[in-house]
Image 1 (tube, rainbow, N blue to C red):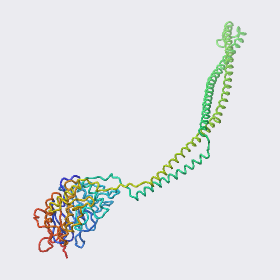
Image 2: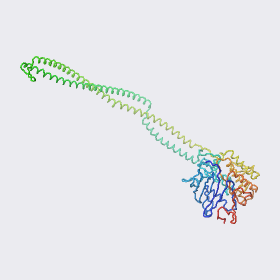
Image 3: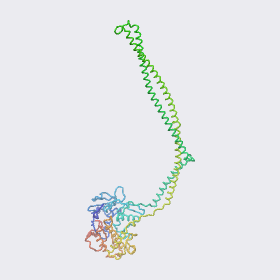
Image 4: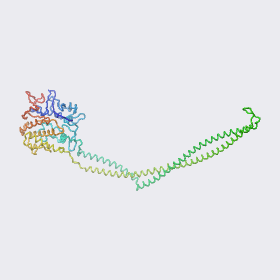
Length: 602
């Protein structure tokens, strides 16, 4: 999300059974002042509460219960509203990138998005973003409260003797420094390699060892089975055995091939004889039919000849039964000669046909005898193939396969032995593995310019604030804090000046945010930067430096919205006409008593 104009807090409103209490903010410098116990710090706590803090900003006995904050973003409004003692924060947004709805005050919720994501988007960050949280490179989601102590400085932290920037809880400091790296440089930690903790390393080792051990046991069982098989097949020279058996098998297969060819040849011969028999059977049937025809013709002609012989004896006296005329003897003799010739020819044909038929039947008998012989040969060949050659081939093939499985078993045993040996070595390597000493050191990730600019900014601000030892100050990498003349700030100064120096450190970082950071907090809050003075500390901060600090607040307003809370008794006398100046009087006679209307300091 690209934000063209810096966002700013616009209005804070607290509502309940009393008259609503509200306070308006300007884009630049806002000073809120007044005596103690008028609700100045309550304003800071209300804003903090809307970032997801679990600390109540005021008591429920005040009869106020709801806090609302309006934030201006690119002339659009994002309104956050939260009721006391509730974890939900209601968001109303006219900004397209931020959806209206209910958000959760904490980062972990199954059903609701955390309010932190709304703040991050206002800063220009698109969540989720991962940052490293410990030396082992473990990550966590970036939340707005991860780095909130860089821009909301509470009263209780103002005179902190340790770094004002770092969280006081040590195990939160790495995440803060990583978050700062992301804000400054957009450093992406999503692909960073996580380092194992000692416990994780132990768990990993045990898991790997258990897995390897289970595989060794599994393969040992297989090894034992294979060894038993080898003992049962114990053969001195298995390679020679396989070679000899293979030769026998090849000869057998050659014999089988030849026998199959012989069998096929017999089948072809039988098929050929069957074809000839079929043809001759058809021919024989035809001869029989012709013989029957010849016999009929013979009977007919014989009858005619016999009839003519009978007529010849009575030819001169007999009459024709058809025409009743006398039968001519010459005509009868002529016809008888003709029929006799035809009958003689037919007798000759019948004789030839009978001889041919006899020859054909003899030929068929020869073919049938040949077929019988071939069938007997085929049966013998088939019996040899089925009962001798094929079983022998199967036996030899099986035996060769058994021998080959023996060789494979030996090879498998050797492989298993190598695997088990390697796995055992892996276990030894695991037990002897040295943990990597790589640790995540976030300060090493900062550029040299960061440290230089922090020191330069601190010296510049202190110089503007009329501090005569400004050039002896620097930003210390180890302490992540200001040092003066190579000493910690607590070595020479009391609470009042420490609060002052802490303010300068935050302002120095604010300047880097303003001019160089990829993502920047758009407002800063200082709750009582002159805190020590109000607590009765010895005034080790000259009045000129107090005035100069507030002058710097005014002159640096262009670096982002600034809200300064200060007690009226310590507030330097300046012209505040050109800023948003809010004063609580703690009086019912004039001005505004305090922040929460109707709530008095009893």
